[in-house]
Length: 137
Image (tube, one colour):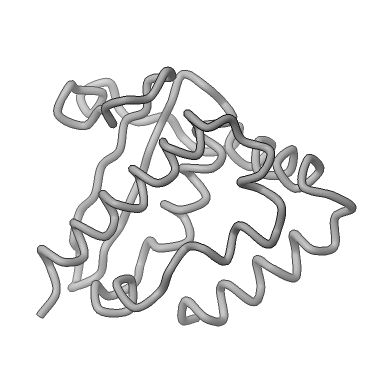
């Protein structure tokens, strides 16, 4: 499934919920099921700076595709960062670079985040983008 198809599937799933708070609640429930990062990956190097909550992010390239994981001491932060990690994982760097995560805004998810949490989301996207740029072509 390419990113456009994934976006359509995610948009359909989230749009079926009544409002942005319900959508965020669904993402939090999903985040509870995500495995925590191994303690060895919870390093200063993997920590996203500037977040009130601790947010760790790791990326790796396998078979030419990017794979992303995160963890946080805040379930809401883990939920929104985890959404981006899950969404972009398994895709080629060129496809990642061609797809903007702004599709989340009309779904009413980002509007229910504090400015600091929106900032964390932007920083995760920037890390995903940097990784894709470094591994493209």
